[in-house]
Image 1: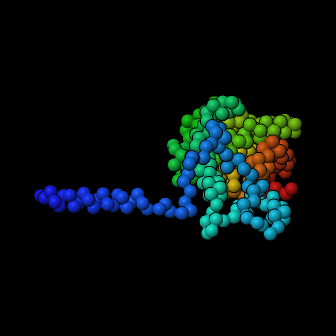
Image 2 (image 1 turned 120 degrees about the horizontal axis):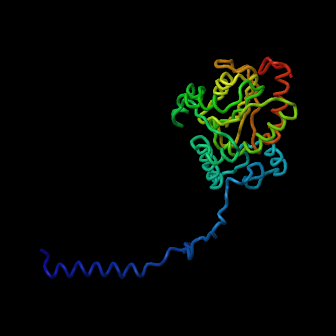
Image 3 (image 1 turned 90 degrees about the horizontal axis):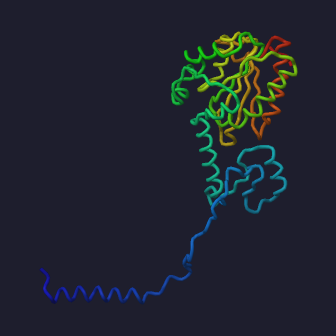
Length: 294
């Protein structure tokens, strides 16, 4: 146990240290932050809405005008600049935002309310979950038993063209393009006098699921509109796979494909009209894919 004398010495040392600390001069050149930055409600910048083609983040570029002309030719991440050896904050945040959008496109489902709005009923492939869809592509190429029953009940038999839409690897692509591409495609086919079947939606579908549908309804041509694997450039890309006399196991070379259907590629309305024209040519030639001579 400490004596009174030892205790007084310890207290004295502590008091001396406190007095010394009061007399220490403040560090020069350090500015105190008086307030934090304020962001008004609803005013936070959406970095995902910025067009990368119009963005130049290189400090003091040698020839800005020519570089901007180059950037208009591609959506690649050019002219992003650096902060030392690292990405700038805006660049890193945009990268993460685009990556998050790609993940959402793969793992989210197309809302049932959206399908009801555009008048499509839903069937499911043999996949039971999104994880199984990703790991078992073979199951995504077949319609499930319940789906087969629904197709047999609701779909028109022996149509000239059967249109099918599927989420594939991007539910976002369906939500972004279906409302415009379907009317344009259907009106184009109507203009050519082509008999179309009952359009519907396949959940967890692969391109090959359209071949199964072709067999079930006995269609001359199957047009599969499907969400494509998203990247960091866009998560909204859709493709149209058009197959003459589709059947399970048909070679991939027998398909005619229109890809990059999105707002920064081929706009969905324009793509719908183009696909209708292609279908007319396929029917006239009775061939698709590498057998079709355009």
